[in-house]
Image (cartoon, rainbow, N blue to C red):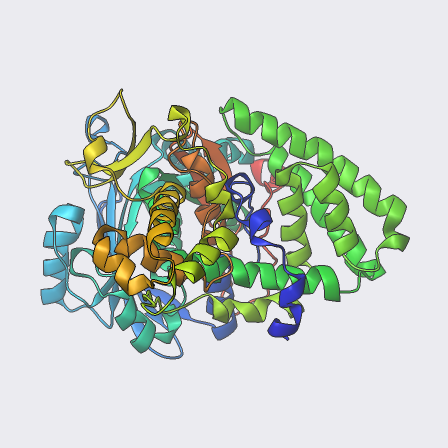
Length: 566
C-alpha cells in the first residue's frame, strides 16, 4: 500500500521548503500523541510508590510504571530555589525540580546515587539504567495563584490558566547516551515500550506534568487542611508543561537527515493516503468542520507577544472562516480531500494549509495511526567509491538543484555561521564581520558545501572526465564528508531542508517549530527568531484516565468551569 501511494506524495521541493516546515502543526502522528495512545491502549499502570514531600512540596517522589513488557521508575527531586537563582537559560546550575526515568526498580543505594547526581544535571553522571534526565522551574506567578485558590476552597480561573498553560516549564530534556545514560541502540533493542523516536524524553515530560498537579494538590492540603479542595480534573487536563526551545535543537534536523526524512516520509505517506484515498462522507465533512471551529477557538486562546506570530494567528483565524465556508458551499465537489488541499495551496497561507492537513489526518485514524510504528530508521551513511564523477555531478544537479540556484557570492547569502559556545557547547548563530569564531563554524550550511563540492567537481571533470569518486577523494580528501552526505541523503526522499542556512536572514525558528510539531507541542510563542516558548501535553489524559474512555486532545480548549467557581 505504501509503495502504491508514493507517487501521490508531495514533491520534496514543496515539503522541504523551510518556511513550510516552520508552519507545521502537531498531528495524530506526533510523538506525544503516539506515546499517550500506547499508554492508554496497553493500560500502563502508573502509581506513586513514594511521595516524601514536606508541607512546602520539597522532597523526593517516585512513580512506578508497569507496562506489558517491563517495570520503570520515574524519580524526582524537589528543592527550594530562591527567585534570584531561578534561571531558565542553559547556563543555570540549579532548578526547582530535577528528575530521571529509570530502568527497573530503584533501591535505596541507587536512589542516593541519583540524589547526588541528578540535581547537578550536566555536572553529574548517571549510568545506563537511566533513559532520560530533565529539570524544570515553576511558573511562580501561576503556581502561587493556583495554590492560593485551592487552599481557599476555590478552583482557579481557567482564563488565568490559559494565559500561561503550565505550572512548571522544563529547560532541557536529555537522553540517548548523554551524561552516561542508556544510548538509543540499547533502548530500541531492549525496551519496546520506548522504541519510538524520543519516547523516553516525551514520557519524562508527561510524568513531570503529573507530578506538578500532584504537588500543588499536596501543598494546598498541607497549608489549609480544613478548606483546601483538589484541582478539578478538567483543569488538570488543561494544564500542560511549559518548554523553552532555542538554537540547541536546530542542528538536529540537519545532522540526522536520514531519521528526519523518515519522519517526514511517514507523515507525507499518511497525508497522501488521506488526501487521495479517503472518501469525504457527510459525517467526515461534519467532523472536519467541527475541528475547524475547534481550531478557531484554540488559536484565539493562544497567547503570544511576538508581532509576527500574532499576525500569523490573525491570518489563520480569518482563513479558517474561509475554509469553513468553502467546505460548506462545495462539499458536493469533494470527491477526495485533495480537492480541498489543492485549493488551499493556491489560496491560503502555509499555516492554514498545514492545519488543514493536520485536521485531515485527525479524522482518518484508520489510514494514519498504524504508521506510528514506522518512524525509526537506522542511519547508514556510506560512500560509493565506484560512482563516476559524471554520475555524482548528475546526482547533485538533480537532488541539489535548490543549492545550485543560490548565489553564494552575494555576502548576504553567506555571512551567517553556526558555532558551539565554549561555555556550554551549545549551538549559536554568528555573522561574519560582526562576531568572532567564523573559523570554528559548524558544517551546517549544506547548500553552500554542496555548491563548493560541485564547483571543484567541475574542475576535475574538465581535467579527468572519466574519473570516479575514489580518485576525486584521493585528490581532495576534504570533500569526503560532503560527498558521503550527498550520496547517502540522495537515497532518502525528504532528507535535506531546502534552505540556505548561511543566509543573513535565516530563520532558525522554522527549524525549531518543525521539530517541535513532530514532538506534538502547541501554543507556539516565539521570543525571537532564535527561540520559542511552547506548551507540551496540554489537554492530554491524566494517569487516572488510563483504562477509561478519553476524548482526543488535538487542539485543546479552555474548559468551561463556571459551576466550579460558585
